[in-house]
Image (tube, rainbow, N blue to C red; front, side):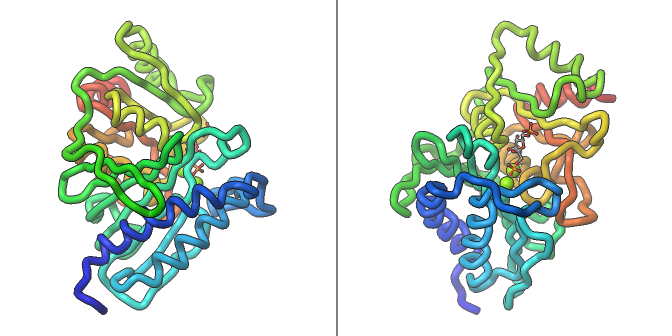
Length: 285
Ligand SMILES: O=P(O)(O)OC[C@H]1O[C@](O)(COP(=O)(O)O)[C@@H](O)[C@@H]1O
Ligand SMILES: [Mg+2]
Ligand SMILES: [Mg+2]
């Protein structure tokens, strides 16, 4: 064990790996002949990015466990300080059409599965026209541009803009519960609000971080826990959006207060400006 901060080491490793992951997408746009633990068909790139991150992150001093939505089992490492949960490629179905995707990570100080209250840092990489990173630690959010493994700060103390502008809601509209559908109608009827939906949660959440607003992948009639995963997607996103002054909710409470039972648990996810999430919780009562 060294005295280096393992959280810094993990974030630096993910930021450095982003350039390589981006380049490695070329030639890996097909499907793998396999399913992930959530029963979804994996892309070749999902499997490849998971293996790359597992190798690198599990060998960092201080990392006790590595888990990802692309593998059933948690990787146990030789240390005991922090645990890392990753969505190696969020929105990988966008590979076929060459649209936005990302990498999402949460760093916890408890064994996985851990509640969001055990997060010590979280963030995401966005593979857009350029590669950027949003990172939260100690209640502060920083945005970076990533080039060739280098991180350049582009904004510090990032907060959600006060006047919400954008909204995006996942799942099929006929599968939404009635109370959620009514809430969406209210949001859509405000002439100041614009639809922004790209099929990669992280791209849509990054729109909310940039312009203010709300993103949700709600509970569905036949899937009351929604689609997104608590450890790899819900908690890291909620931690960062709350650090930026917004709110998260599973419909009743902060996502960070949801108790996990399994590392692959799903959670209905709603994040955005606090007043929009307050109104959502009122609408779902
Ligand atoms: O295509 P659907 O079922 O509407 O789901 C879209 C959602 O699923 C996701 O792709 C799930 O993430 P993964 O791509 O990491 O599995 C989200 O990024 C996105 O918001
Ligand atoms: Mg995802
Ligand atoms: Mg994924």
